[in-house]
Amino acid sequence: MASKAKSGSKAAKAAEKANIDRFPPILKQVPDNQKQRYAALQETFQKRFGTKPAFFARAPGRVNLIGEHVDYCGYSVLPMALQQDIVMAVGPNPDKKLDLVNTGDHYDDFTTDVQHVEIDDTRPHWHQYFLCGYRGVVEGEKISEPVGMNVVTDGTIPARAGLSSSSALVCCAALATMHSNGLKISKVKLATDCMECEKYIGTHGGGMDQAICFLAKEGMAMHIEFHPLCTSDVKIPNGVTFVIASSCVEMNKAAATHCNFRVVETRIAAQVIAKTEGLDWRKYRVLRHVQEALDTPPAEMRAFCNKDIHSNAWTKNELCTFFGLTNEELNEESMSKNTINENVFELHDRARHVYGEAGRTIKFKKTCDEAKKNYEETLGILMDTSHESCRELYKCSVDELDELVEVCRNAGSLGSRLTGAGWGGCVVSMVPTKKLKEFISKVRTDFYSKTPERQAQVDHTLFATKPGPGARIYEPTNL
Ligand code: ADP
Ligand code: NG1
Image (tube, rainbow, N blue to C red; front, side, top):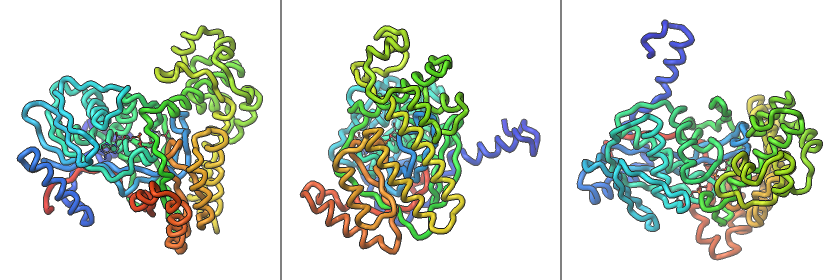
C-alpha cells in the first residue's frame, strides 16, 4: 500500500506513520533491571516445555491521573503507563493447542485447542482474559489457521486494584498472538481490537487501558482522545512525583456489575437529554454526542442536566413511560445483559459527573501544556475535585478510599484521587518530590499500619512511579 502512495502526499505520510507505529521492532535487549526476572521466566518455560521461548511479550499496567469514567462516554482521559507489567514467555505449540501456564500460585494451568476457544463471561478466570486478547487478533485479522502457542505468564501489577492488570493481560496475549502468527499490526489497530475483545469477558468499559498499554511513551503521561483514537504527550511537572497507594479493598470488575451499570446509566442519561431537547434519541448512546449536538462545551452542560433530568432517582417504570417503551424494549435499547434487573437510576448525578470530569481533564492537559508559575497547585485542585465528584456524584468510591485520600492529603500531597474504576483499588497522589520520603512514611503509619491486612500489602502496593514505556516484544538473548 505504502509504495503506491505518491511520495510526500498525505497518503504516503499516513502510510509511513502507520509503518512506524507497527510492531515489531523487536528489541534485543531486556532492560538490565529486568534481566533476572526474564531469565527466571525462561527457565520456567524451559522446564515446562523443554525448549527456550521464541520471544517475550510485555504489556504495562497504568495509572489514570484524571478523567475517570468518561472514556466510555466518548471523552478524553489522561493516564500514564506503569513500570509494573505482564510478561509472557512464548513458543510454538506443534499440536495446535494453547498451553497456558502462570508463575502465580493461584492461577491454574489451562489448555485448549486453537480452533475451540470459548470464553465464559460468567466465570472470569485468568486464562479467559488471555483468550479475549487471542480472539481479538485471530478475529480482527481473520486468521483461519492460527498457530498453537506455549505460554508462561508472569505479572507484577497488583490485581483488582484499578491499575489495569486485566487489560495488560488481554493486550499482552494479543501481542503474543500477533507475533506468533507472523503478523505486523499497528499499535492503534491493536488497541482498538483489544478494546472490543475485552468485552468478551463481560465488561463494557471504555478504551483507556488498552490505548495507553500500546501507545505509552517512556517519560510522558498521555492525553488520549477517542473516536478517532489519537494521543498527545503530556509532560508532567518537574519537581512532583506521582505516588500510588492501595486502599487494600479489591474489586473484580468482571464479577461485579457496578461498572456496567454506570455505562448504562450514562447511556440512558444521554437519551433522556436527547429526547427532551427534541433530538432523535435512539441515535444517541454516549453523553459526548448529545453535548456536541447541543453545541455546548462539556463544562457548561450542567444547565442541560439540571433542566432535562430530575435530580431524584428514576425508576425503570418511569423510564419506560418516558420513552414509550415496554420493559423488554428498554432492555434491548439501553441495558446490558447483567444489568437488566436494576431498577433505580441516578441519571442526574451520573451525567453531572461525566460532563464535569470531561471539562477537568481538558483543563488538566491545558494547564500542563501552558506550565505557568505554580501550576502544580491547579493540577492538585483538579485531582481533589475529581475525587469529590467520583465520591458524591458517581458514587464509585468506598470508605477506605476516602480515608486513604484524606491520609494522603494530610501527608503532604498536592492532590489525591481514586484511580481506575473505583469501588476499591488505588489512590494516586501528586507529591512534591522533595517531600516524597516523608509522604510515604506518613501514609505507611497513618493508613497501612492500622490493620494487619494492610500491613501485609504495603510493600507492593505503596510506591512512587514514573511514566513507563508501552507494550513490547523482546528476543530472549543475553539473559
Ligand atoms: P484490574 O484490571 O483493575 O486489575 P480486574 O478485576 O478487571 O482488575 O482484573 C483482575 C483480574 O485479571 C484478576 O482477577 C485475574 O483474573 C487477572 N489477572 C491480573 N493479573 C494477573 C496475572 N499476573 N496473571 C494472571 N491473571 C491476572
Ligand atoms: P479499571 O480500573 O481497569 O477497572 C475501568 C475501565 C476503563 C475506565 C475506568 C474508569 C475497562 C477494561 N476498563 O478501568 O476503560 O472506564 O474503569 O475510568 O473496562
